[in-house]
Image 1 (cartoon, rainbow, N blue to C red):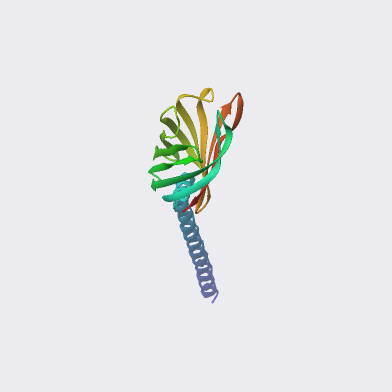
Image 2: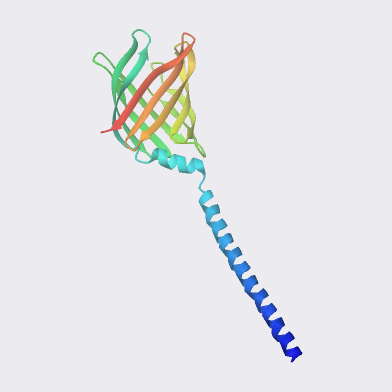
Amino acid sequence: MSKNLCLHGSRKVKSKFAFWALVRTTTTMKYASFIAAVASILLISPADAASESFFDNLAGNWTGSGKAYVKIYGEISARCRVSIRGTEVVIIMSGSCGMLVFRQPLGFSLRKAGNNRYVGTYTGSKTGPAKLEGTLRGNRLVMTIRWGGLVNGDRTAQMVLERTGPNSFAETVNDSVAGTNRNTANFAFVRE
């Protein structure tokens, strides 16, 4: 009788161990599945997610208004009309800005140069095409402009394109004028 109790008792112990081993294995598998799911989500880098959201809906026709610094007039108000086509790999903007008296071409072509880096050409300067190179940081594409000649006494400036909503973006150019950094262009665009 005592042997039966021992055998019966060891079966209970073995079945308890088997039960907890099964629970532990199931729990481990759940954690492993959870970790695999999180890892697959993390494989989409923040740069890729940022570039997708930045370029979502960017193609189309846009109108803008704002201010530009013109050396002989100072700061003037202007209106712009541009067309953007392409995707996050190649983006082309063409159009113009101006007021009653004059119109100035405004445009650029950009191509993705790896991860969240972009390079291209700006066409809106009287010194000719300028080189663009920059990095996408969330909803802002921050680029260095290298002018074809002297502009405001130097050859570099900074352009920032910022998505301000699904149907809007802003373009700002910062440059040194007479030794002081200032906005030389600041335009807000909305979809037509």
